[in-house]
Image 1 (cartoon, helix red, strand yellow):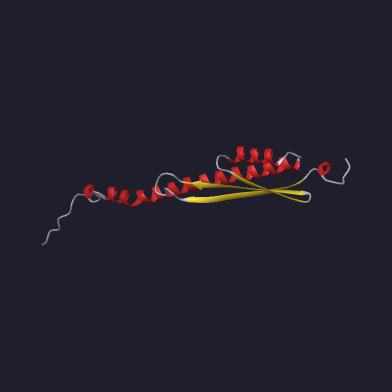
Image 2 (cartoon, helix red, strand yellow):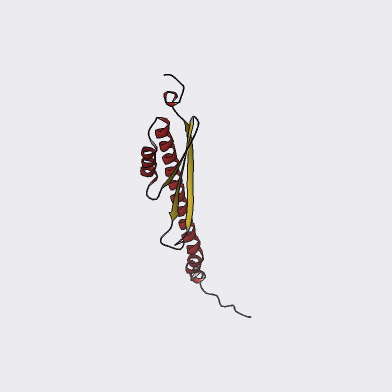
Length: 131
């Protein structure tokens, strides 16, 4: 009769935890980086939306373009660029900002984010309308 030599049941999975960790860990790291980059992008986009709305509101209330630009740059953060357009009763503001990663696997990656907002100027600011 042949006897099959087997290792005891507690030694059968020896090293499998290390192998599973070696396979899963890179996937977990990539997912964490993706979550952090996405979160940063979403946060910056919300900041730009608020900056565009704030500048459009300033212009609609009768503030000058310099004050609206300063408000948008304050809300939007460093590197925020502001474009203002007036068309009749409406003011349009577009705010853009580059998001660049300086460290990590995606070092040097760059995204251009933008937001825009429009607002109708207050009636007392329109020409030919009496208060």
